[in-house]
Image (cartoon, rainbow, N blue to C red; front, top):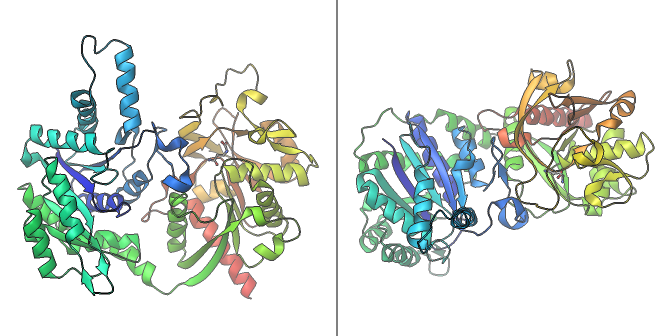
Length: 543
Ligand code: GLN
């Protein structure tokens, strides 16, 4: 029988509901329970695919091709359990489904309303395809008090009422700010936020208080009294240096144990935090610094490349280095200054991206990496730019470009239908931009004895994609004659999936996003190998 744990947030956003849910899932999993985590997002976009990642954060892609909230990335990395499209829903998706149903006449005769139609839809989502799980953790996006969250909160209230209180539990995450001037921690915002929650019928069972200082007993008692929760169910979540400490801190607060108690469940196994403790020991150990440049068009990002940041950390932990990954603005790079800007970095990475802005600088950075044998990793857009660079500077196709940037030039990157005619290959259209890219996991065959096949220790891989444009395969033989090998192809041979340069210590481009599958306990081999190459290069430099 599954138990449902609902995680809401109050006072301010960005308190770490995602990491709290992921950490709790990990703690329960480490005790031998089966856990599923889901996210309910209150915005009107059908999915985050069309949102600006620089405002909303990364779009995380699942194996089955859903474009989801970045929190699903945390869930996967902390639990090693692949998320699916059934694990994230938005208000936009709910309304879309309901309106489509209404148009098909499925509600004939009734007035379609928030209650019961929207709330029923949400309840169905929460328990959809739950079978063997012991726990389903549902994170509600947004902050209590927002107009947008109301239908979700109403739905989880109803759900808990219908399922029975012994089958569901509410965790509310709030902020307890520290006021420097008076030297005090303030509990009032928490009290107000819980009051809001209770006014819509939800009494939290556990309150988690995010704060920068230890919360003394007296403050916890105050929160307990005013918010009507037991004192030991007021739990602190102190700011930590590394996200990998979060499960350890929650274990110290006995969060998972208290949850088992509330449900009246016996502890299945003792908690075993070795995997997290090992990582934190590594993070805190003194390691050699290695600097790499991530060349992109926007540099003040935060969460826009969350999985990439994480995968780089995983790769550096496996190489015992302290990675300094600096974002370099590609809009500022040109032929004359490229070596000055990049000479102090031990490797260069060009991540996924969209649009023409800053591409010339990226191409200059790739030319520099190719000529001066600096380790280079091009991911998705980065691989496409590497093809343009070689087409221009090695094959002499001066006007080589991508049709993503407009009609001019020679399109060496383009929509499939632009360069394969009559082969029946259907690719996403440009007219409808939502959910029409090549999305999700696809297999690729790797060339025998290529560097990439050695890195994967396999000739067949399965990686996640999110792109609309493809490298024109017609260039394959010409580029290969010049040493740029097409080392990965789709199983039918039609789509270039990976490239690499001969006679170069480490120059790899991939059309997919390996960062989505990297885990703290199982760093992705491409990232481990790339950081190793950066480490070797930095040692050579210092010799
Ligand atoms: N803009 C490119 C495309 O759509 C690359 C996308 C990406 O890097 N994820 O193909």
